[in-house]
Image 1 (cartoon, rainbow, N blue to C red):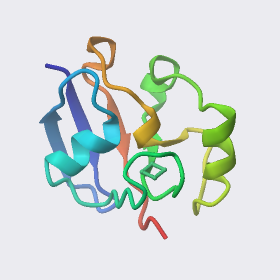
Image 2 (spheres, rainbow, N blue to C red):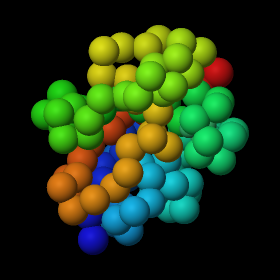
Image 3 (tube, helix red, strand yellow):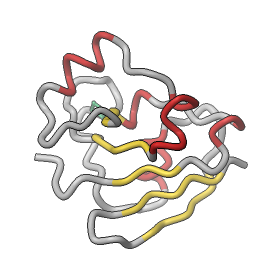
Length: 106
Ligand code: FES
């Protein structure tokens, strides 16, 4: 199963196995990784699943859709590598993915 590393703002790392087909957000929530609120449950409607994709993984993780881009406007401290983690689908290609979590989702 693809392994994903979530790094909390304070530096704590969580390496979890996430089943392909789930989103990066679901991988965090199901494995009790703190720092992703996901208030809307993955509908691309809340921007509380904001993550920063590690530079080395930006291309493989893909670019945000127009809808995701417009929701990202509601997130704090958006950077060029910001994504909404409910919109990144886990696949074998993303085995090893590293994402960093923002200080806060609000
Ligand atoms: S969980 Fe709401 S936008 Fe991702």
